[in-house]
Structures are given as structure tokens and as C-alpha cells.
Length: 302
Image 1 (cartoon, one colour):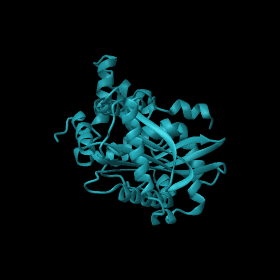
Image 2 (cartoon, rainbow, N blue to C red):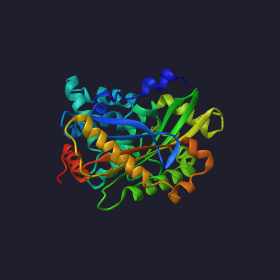
Image 3 (cartoon, one colour):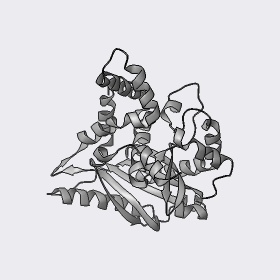
Image 4 (cartoon, one colour):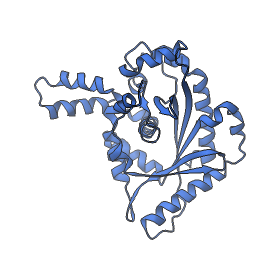
């Protein structure tokens, strides 16, 4: 499996990523390497919230269906429709997978899928949405399983994403939950892959790799963990320019990260996994409003 093959399976994320601002930094709670602090971007003095939500929704086709599946669906929808109509039908089918009862979790998984591809150049291995939304299928695994390459090695990224409102959960509690969840799913991920490897939820191009890993025939493949904590952060921003707004938000994320220093949850991470665990901290102002705006994009009432 070559780097070019992985790159060919990545969904273009450029338009979406432009709606976010991110920095890499070393945080006090896990200082062995750089992690990511991110927020919604600003255009001058205005937050690009509407752009963020719109581009999130534009990403759903590739999140739900592989490129091969999209092609076959477009062909099936083309009878009696032009290409635009067939594409619209495909997008509607993908959007119909997003249910009002679990929008926050689906928001988290879509965000995770996008950021794994952008920051780690990791293509989706297992398609979770068709599994999650099918009541006849068992689904208790990691939020995302992607494949990438790092320093010449193939990497299986297990991703976990949590989205919390500060009125319900503090930043500290959200991080404890996401770390606990990703460690639990790390223990069980081989069983999950075994359950779906021979079904049609895997990207066909990566199915052979999944089989090799399950059979112990992928000795150069490493498993890494990615935790995304999306949380409400409404601290005041004393800013008069785009740069000041963004600097303020990143400073607030660093302060939240500093509050986790010496937290007992980090002692639960096995020593051999510490170099392989990655954190993305996504601070959002008025998170409930953002989730409501995301929900409206799918036609769900608030």
C-alpha cells in the first residue's frame, strides 16, 4: 500500500479547513510531543461560523460513502435525471443518515473524519455512518478508523471524539471521557475490525490491509490514537483584530490544557502508547448554538 494510494482515497477538505484556525503546540498535560489547538476561523472581526457549518454539511457524501460507492449510486440515480439531479439525490441520501436524536455525536464523528484526513493524511478505512444508522448492526467501536503513513510506517489511527457543553461537562471531564473511551476502544478494535472486514463497510482499496492486520501479516503497521475534545469556551475575548481574536482563543485553550497537568487520567495510558496518542482541542463559543445551526442544515427543528 503506497502513499499515493492513501492520498487518492482522501476526501478534499480544503474548503472546510479554511473555516478553521489551528496551531501545533506542546501542552503541559502531555509534553512529549506537539498536539493541536483549533477554533473556528475569523474573517477580520467576524467568526466564520456560518461558513464552518455549511462546509461541514458539504463533507457528508465522502463521510458516509466511499468514492466507489458514490460512483455506483450516481449511476443508479441517473435514470430519468441529469448529473446534477443524481448528485443531489446522493447528497440527500447521505444527509438522511444524520438523525435529530444523535446529531451531536454525528457532528463529532464528521469533524473527526475531516481532521484525521487533513492533519494526519489518513484515509477512512471503516465507514461508520452506515453501521451506526442501521439498527440491525452491532456498533460499539471507535468513532473512526483511518489509515495513514508516518516516518515510512503504515499507521492505523483509532479516533475518538467528544462534544461537550461546559454547562454540563467541564473541559477536564470531557478530556477524561475521551481518553477513557479511546483506551477502551483500543483494547477492542481488533474485534471490531474482525466483525466488519468482510462486509462492504471498508474502503475496497484498503480491505486487503485490514485482512493482513487481522491475520498478523502487517508487521510494519502501528496503531496510534487520536482524541478530539470539542468544548464550550465562553471566556471574554479582549480583541480588536483577527489576530488578537485568534491569539486570545488559543491562549484560552492553553490555559484549559494547563489545568489538566498531573491529572490521574494520564496514568491510565500505557507507557508504550504515550508516544502514539494525539490530542486535538477544539474550543467553541456558544457550542449549543453551533450544534443547533448544524441541525438546521439537515432540516431538523431546534
